[in-house]
Image: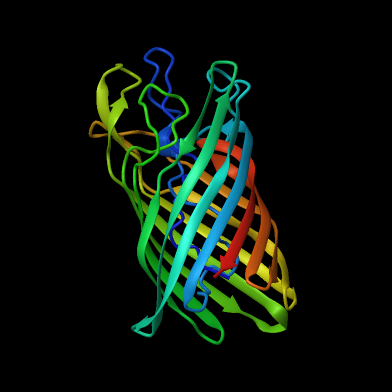
Length: 313
């Protein structure tokens, strides 16, 4: 299985919105911003494939019908009364694994190109948009294989290629750059079990095209740093079939900033868990999994289903 390095997939991109000035947000990192790729490649995250060219195709569907507040309570008043969100799309990710070794590690590179559609509505708003999202590039990743433990490290860069309008409610892009280092570990245990964990930390640049919802004036916004962990526990039932559980934990570890001012109560949190299975046949690998969110704060609460195809050329 391939480790996910750079999937340019923005799961809940900042969505500006305000009733008086038509902009602001539902709380950028404390709302619908998720610059990372939570739960994308949970199973065998640190296991690198042999040298060669691979094409990964991700199809996903996320659905939420609740928006949780800073204390974890469901927000039912304006503008969140009747809130729902659907976010789906497809991500193409070419991967190249070289024959070179560096410090004993396998060397690879990849990128992700997302085509997505987003629909948000409540009793107060109704908006949708579709098209190209933010592209991600991984110029190099390093993977150290082992008999029991596999380790991988990457440094991911997200580019602001997705459509963005500060007066839009359903943006496809973040309108800022994101740097995300990743450290992943997979361990193969006795009796066919394996466990994986990927630790990611997001660092955001400023969005210079933003509207202060309090004043209606132009300003800049920078989401706080984000820590997120993808995890899985798998069982190799047969040579070509694996089942298990997987999910992620997400937490904002610093406050958002707007125009030089830290935004109180802007930090979000989410935990998810769900089933998954992997089937391998010839040059094709198929992963189907779901993740159900709980312990959510300052963001939507829903669930996501993934269909992941890997083809080895």
